[in-house]
Length: 300
Image (cartoon, rainbow, N blue to C red; front, side, top):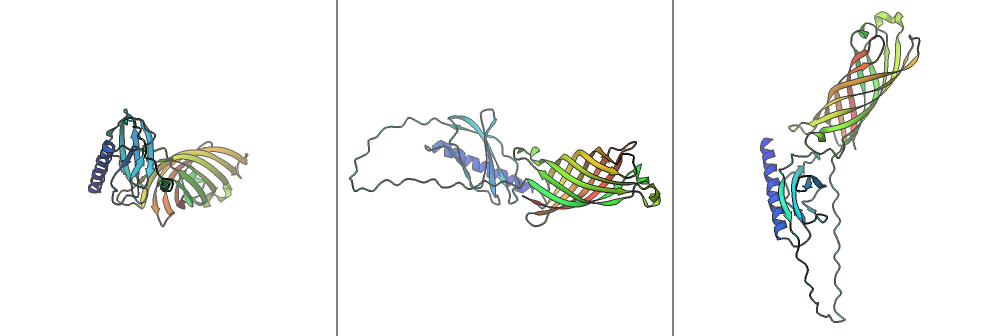
């Protein structure tokens, strides 16, 4: 994979050399053009000012971009490739270029044409190809197995919990090498717990509906494009009903953290499995548990 990355960086650098020469000799509207990279489904290009502050960012499927809105001056540019799954390579180094001010036009009289001469043909602009945008939204549904931790493990039995519905989103504006892996998520979980079999006389039964939000970090394995690891954490509010308490209905805060593995099945479906640690506020002790889950979802 290192050799492939070096090849991509070399091709990116070669593309920039081509596009810098296009600036030096072009008298038309400024534009970038580079050689196609084998295996790339698209490209990301960033244009910065003299301080490398990004002024323009585009994702394209072809190998050129127009720079009509840039005034004459000094600029920097860099490029990255997208693979067939829409995943971005590392950015190339910043490259300096200058847009020179065009000389003033000269007025030349056109020769008079005969009345029967053909009318000039108007040029039509070709439609631009839509940019390639990787999938950043995922929805999933699945079930959990709750393993109760001390002290409540002496009173509550382990149980299966279903269903759980989750929704995750990775913002488009997060584009650098680290933040592009971050995202927001929300989930809705129905949980039903009851007394341990050895303490059936305790008559403990609790039904809860939990609504939570959090952050996650998703990293795609470079050696296995169909798999990714996810780290997550967050919190929320649980709406609980306990039959053996003086207060039947109450609200409780909770937080969670955990990890998971996500595998792409067939487009656009995926499978995710992992475990979360969850702590639900209960007096005198919180209900702590490990939730092992299995989900199936789709990208869109």
